[in-house]
Image 1 (spheres, one colour):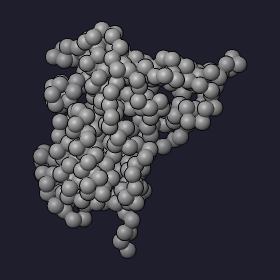
Image 2 (cartoon, one colour):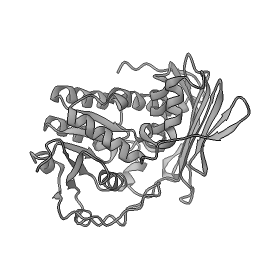
Image 3 (cartoon, one colour):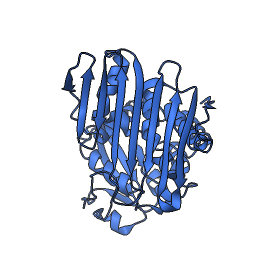
Image 4 (cartoon, one colour):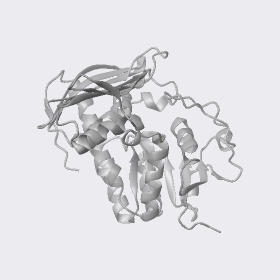
Length: 346
C-alpha cells in the first residue's frame, strides 16, 4: 500500500554533496528517493565513484534502477510525483533553482551557503512564503553529533554563561569544482567553508552587533584565511577562524573550544572527542547522539515538508543572517581588524 506520508525526493546535483546526501537519504525514515538530476550520463547511471570531497565519504556506485533520471532540473520540477527537491548545486545557482522549485510547488532543501548575498536570500524566502512551501538551508552543523553538547549547554544554561568561544575549520583548497575558486560563483573559501561556524554562532548567540577580521586571500593560489571576532553584548569573546590552506595535502579539520562559567567544552575532528573540562578540575568525555548529522538533517527537513511546517530548528531567516555575517567578515578583513557594525534587517 502506498504510504501517503512518504516524501518523494528529487536530488539535483550529483557532485560531492549530492553523493553525500544520496547516501544519507537511504537511511531516512519518511522519505524515498524518487528522482535524480544531473547533466552527466555517467552520474545518472549511478556511477559516483570518481567523486571526491573534504570529508571521509568517498563516492560510490549506486543503484538508480528504480529512480527517475532527469538531465535538467525543469524536468524534475514538472514531475507531479516529486514532493521536495534537495538542491546540491553550485552556490551561484541556488537562488534561481530554489525559486523555480518553490514556484513549481515543491518543498526545497538547498545546500549551504543559502545564496551568494542577502538580496538573493530575501527573494528565496519571499518565494517560499508565496508558495506556502518549506525552504530550508542544509546547515548540517546544527545536526552534527559533536556539536550537540555545545548547543545543549547554551540552551539549558547547565554550564553557566558563555565567556569565550572559538570555532576553527580549515582544509586545502578543493580540487573539485572550479566554480568554488571563483568569488562571483562560490564566494571563496572563507564564505564557503566558515559559513558553517558563523551559522552556529547565529544558532547559539543570535546576530552580533559588529564584526572585525584579519587574514589573507589569494584564490588562484588556493589561499583564503580569516580570523574574525563576532562582537556580542553578552558573550565577551566569539572567534571564528580558518579557511583554505595550501597545499592540497593539507587535511580537513573542524573544532571548537567553549569556555563557560562552570567548565570548558572542547572538540576536534583531528582526534579529540567532545570533552568537558569542569571548573572542579575533572575532565570527562561527554555523551552525544550516535545519529549521522546528514541523516538527522535530512530527516528533519522531510518531517517539516511532510507537515508543511516552518523549519524552526534551521530557519531560512537565520541562514540568510549567516550569509550576511560571513560576507561582512570577508569585507571586514580588508579593514585589518577594524570593528564594523552589523546592520541586517532580514
